[in-house]
Length: 75
Image (cartoon, rainbow, N blue to C red; front, top):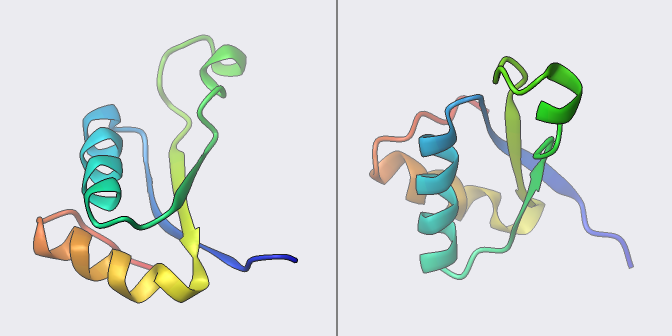
């Protein structure tokens, strides 16, 4: 069984990633973080953004949770 995923946010700000994931966990919204280990390739300077993906069925609710907490979601 495959699950369609949508990108929720893309940022290189680690505090925004931590805050967003805590909010999603608090609402029991499953998510997946992409590009977490890319710092190995870039030399740990933080220029490559990390992405948070959510299931298509949870995208609307996840966007609402982040926007309600002043996290910009432009997707």
